[in-house]
Length: 537
Ligand code: GLN
Image 1 (spheres, rainbow, N blue to C red):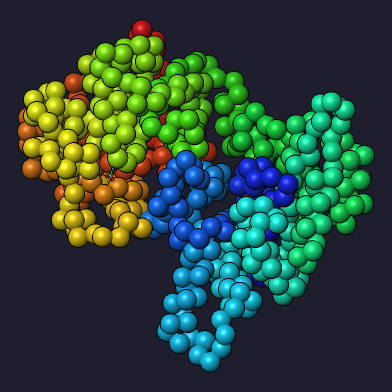
Image 2 (image 1 turned 45 degrees about the horizontal axis):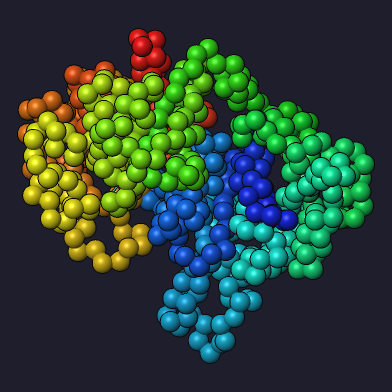
């Protein structure tokens, strides 16, 4: 096999320009030309992983098959490429330092002073090349988190400089910047981009391609000017206009010939065109829906929609699969109670109760379940949302006064959601939840079985607490069925109410597995139930 090609994506001017989407879009175009591509994110912060971060800091924590708690951009990579990522696809400064320090203690550098260059940069280099060295990928795209000029990103930029030198033509750098528009003078300004490229050059890195985010078309003159000032070819100045959906970006990048410029620069053939038939079919369904529904999303982080990124993207995929536009009504769980539930939820076609941790807003989640259960509103509870469904049923149907999760009420007389023995021994918070893919057996004749059309599934987990199986019989005798069980431990992974038109709680996170090419069957069925509900209203 030919050498693996490495593409680095750096960001300049400001953060949040969408490096993840540009990386995913470029990867989509290359994959559609038949290349095997993966994307990796290097995060300059010192946490070992984002698992211990509050979603307000960096949005959702995405979980991979192998149980890595990662940056939400990995979700985009999987959704665009329809290919799982792993622990190797996300590396933080904390992890780099941890492994260098562990090696130092083990004596790997005996006699030497351990330094940022070469020890930290060598470790970063190893992490970048791990994916290339598997032999699975022809192209590895590495997105460097943060913005050029950040002190904490310096070792990464230095590593890019070294790798460019070592890999020569097998490597290129894409720099993503912003071309702001000044309404007072009616102009697009290139100066911030010039400065940001200069900053990169000061670190010894010359970008090959500039991708310029802009709210208005930048035109040929600006492309020429940027090419001149920044030492890039004019055709390598790519305009990236704001798009109506992130799934449009691959098409916009193809129009701008980003894929061709990349292939030329890597000495790969450019003649063929990418096969985007299925992608465009999805986009068409997204843009021209036949019906509309509104689904409520009840959670405590709704001010920051990135906290529920994979859920909202899964809803978009499922909407397209149903030829339906899904409006999401974001509902703060702290604002819902039994008295006002009808006001918040009355006009919805379905409601989803989101994952979460801790007491804040939890009673609002329970009130939401109660309303959905009693009013026959299609309901999907994910993780903490499933636990809320179990608790609501225990309190209001089984009449177990004070029933709760021992996470929320450690003294509850009825811990229907409780810690398993092995979690009771856990003292460290980082990376110690039940994480990653687990098998689940589906009960015959259940809704779950009908939806998945198979008897065993595998889904990803991220939680400490579990359905307390001591209560299982009582639940089943009163109308809540445990329709998914872990084959190894017997733990309840899915609950449903057969009497209800569509009521399901899942202990796992289906949202981590929905992709453009493979919308998740649970979400597809949930949106279909919302469509039916809206027609019956
Ligand atoms: N807090 C719950 C637990 O740890 C649910 C976690 C989640 O929703 N991801 O079990």
